Image (tube, rainbow, N blue to C red; front, side):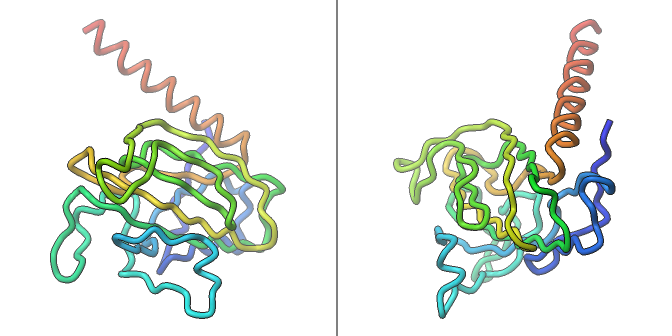
Length: 196
């Protein structure tokens, strides 16, 4: 079974994978401090304007946004936001793959300005959004040495919102093996509990 590696952490919205080869060194968890923009859906191209938006802070993921303090008060589960992460590498494979477990509770993900995943319908209110829970595997051909990951997310249907579950990055082969192994283990444990 492929191993997920947590040797590299996101710091201030940047994951530096210099010297890391996804093909030989393995899968990386996208854990650490993501840029966080509360009550704002930031479009990817806005980050490259003359006066780009500034984050409200950095928020640890995977973890619900509920503990994040905005204007001195912790957030509750309801709201909408944008997460941003830049992944820097001196060598990306020709195709990289992300395994995205369920996020709370609807989102759109962009990589380098291209929409690569959409689950549910994001919105600025409960009436505008549609909640959906499902894991997604996304493959992407990076150009250059930076992957700019932007996730617009909203939640008005669960007590906790945000990047509450892991996202991993690797080669397609390793990600699919890891995903399938995790599913098989879950089914084995569930089956054992039913028998007991």
